[in-house]
Length: 368
Figure 1 (tube, rainbow, N blue to C red):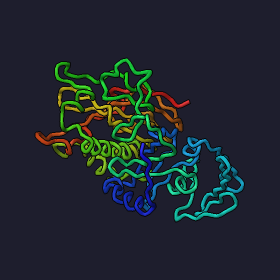
Figure 2 (figure 1 turned 60 degrees about the vertical axis):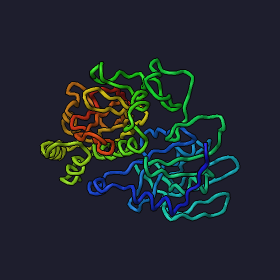
Figure 3 (figure 1 turned 90 degrees about the vertical axis):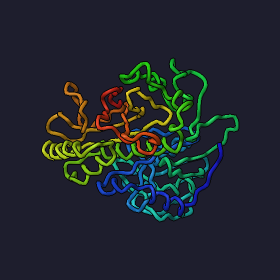
Figure 4 (figure 1 turned 120 degrees about the vertical axis):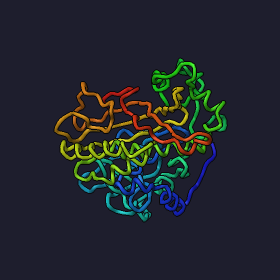
């Protein structure tokens, strides 16, 4: 895998370009995927994000531990000690400097605490931990490279592929990723027309619209949608949020906007607070033969506040017979429906379908 170096200034400019208007209007978080040595880092809770100054911040513990570093915490001084090989690193919350083996290095962004996790600027990863970094604006992904493997094979999104311990239906996919569990591949497909439906291996092989340029557009739209959909706060939600969510969806009229606005009213009345993220997988797309595409996506969600465990999410399939515990993370896999009302060269027009659901065809469990 090639190694990349990306200057901090270029990162700042690219992050500024990728911030969507709809998300800015609704104050939705801008989540960033992180891939290290070909494997996506599945952060258990706190996600990498872009701050108000268009700089990316990553949760230092999970990144550093992936690089075989030991990470501690000293609450009295709000300091994070890190040991990596012969490096002794001391990072302090609220300061834009770090001490490495007794020498001071400065950054233009402070280390911060959010959700009980310490976040550091991406420059910390490259300049202090010694990794090489690349930003891919087309997929909102940070690539961190610490080693090269000349024999390894990667997909067009820089992900490491595997050829052993394959899922039972491996032939349905163009390849199998090293960082994806088999249960994600083996989850059954949504209801479909058996004579016209197509799995992702066929779509990528036979239909020109399924190319990287179009798929990158779709994945970013799903990330934008998830950043709004799964992050709700009754204290701040307003019509800007409703308009922004509506803008991510495929519509023939403004009819759905009224339903979204009713949900906003319910969020306020029921004092709903939700946080989470949606991480779509570009190699897992299924066409149901009825004109819709489903993108298999990993998600995490936590319900922090509500009075009634009812319609907590804007989702027509939200389960009425399932109770979610407050302040507990749930994770799962879901097929998120997308569609278009454009014929011909439709690739750039695919958007989230009005009936998209986290609970229609899914797996979900509480994080232990």
